[in-house]
Figure (cartoon, rainbow, N blue to C red):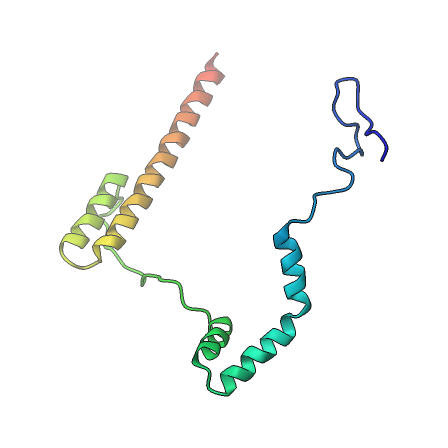
Length: 137
């Protein structure tokens, strides 16, 4: 193995790798390669077991064909006042939750989204002000 070429600053020269032989294969990589070599046969055995009535094998097959759905919430509609500000929007969300029109956890997520929007608006406003000040100078 030859010594890697370095620049005067001690860094590797362009096109020269500091690890020419590459990353050593880990145990996980070797195991995955062995499993991949026999993956089709293993899958066939599991499917055959499922067809023979093995409930555990059937569960494995079904989970791969139709993965469990991730939890999600239904869309909600909230009536907002005309030209609402950020505080008005958050207040309307909380009122809808208090009246039982939307679930409290959904209201919490919506209020967090409004708070994130408020931070974005604040940063945007600060950036505009800073730009205006720099232009005056």
